[in-house]
Length: 331
Image 1 (tube, one colour):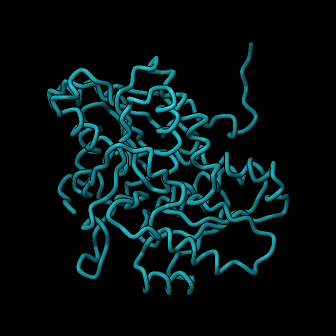
Image 2 (cartoon, helix red, strand yellow):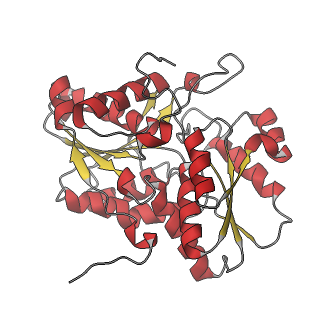
Image 3 (cartoon, rainbow, N blue to C red):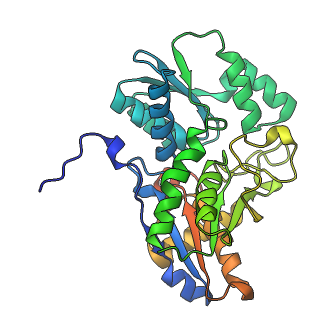
């Protein structure tokens, strides 16, 4: 029987797990590293999952109606996912995006007919950054103030929208559990909005409370600052430990993770570059961070023989204008 899909909305999810056999061999690792390749989603990132679920939940509730413009603040991947789903469903889309993200992100959103606005072009956000620094959570609050009087818009707000962690509880977690036959010992994911770690982590723990959940945040010196104006960042990864409560994404369940790691941009870049050469996967900087942490866990003697699953959020093709794959570049 023929199987023909009618919309990209039908292609989201069911991404594969791949064991990094050559990476394990090169490092003589005694634990198994499985990576969930989220670039198999139609728009090459894990954010396709939340883009679809946030929009369809808003349609069901009546918050989002035909003729509305969808808006979001994002480091890029959520914007791309929303732009694509908006195009498929006939909505206009406008994204407020960090100035320093890769040029590919702007180009892809424009290709889908979306409008991009740099954060530096919004006075309320500029004021917030001057007061709190370039914190993603505070920028979202500032955008909410900036658009409060605008009509016929729907703000997706991935940091607080429950459809974000819910879709990972409903899809990402069950996919990992099914594809491993329940044989997973450690789950590793970056924290951006907290949705992936919280949703998938809670599902896996609901199946086996002994599964260890590990979150990842960037080191403090991985961010741009007056002292480091050219610092390349691990795009989309947000600090959640040793920061003020106001800076922690609302969608992060602080009770779900058992441990957390900090990763520097150098470490993320190095792991992504190596995985491309050992196992033929081209992934982004945040995926490199996840591979780095999975390898650190695999080196621990107590984890010998265990299975570690790490979520790799997106494709490396979105970083070709950065120095991610420039072997001579250390950031």
